Image 1 (cartoon, one colour):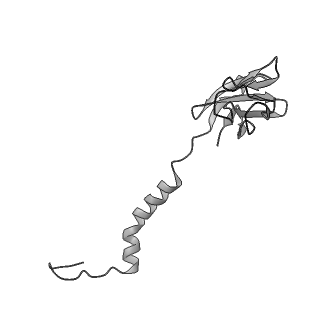
Image 2: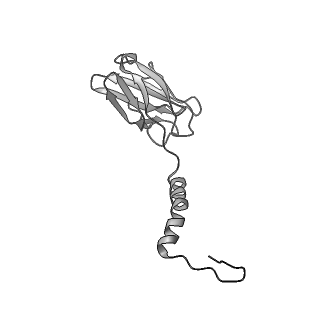
Image 3: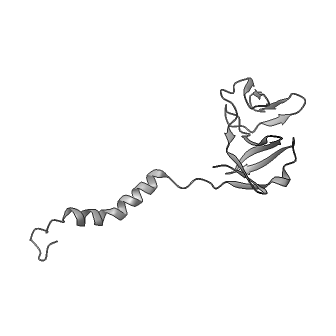
Length: 135
């Protein structure tokens, strides 16, 4: 650092330079990593009768929960073609998309129309009386 105008600044040691830059580097690393993801959504297990499809919102998006004898599945209800909301049709035994007449089978696999990929499955874990849906 310069003590008088017109003199050259004293160079920082490597240690001093790193100490001065550490807060900025940490801030940059946090921005690069992005904000923390959404928290898992808790759903009381007793709200999920076996065999009944229940829709909940996870990060503002519709997700279907289905409890079976082997556990609970969580499936996104957004079509993989253009993101329209699909719904389960019991008579057709399929998820149907109102936008472009796409259909998915009971496992969420494309069956008809333009959807290129299966409906997304979300992580689910049961902890005591709660089902935690999401990351």
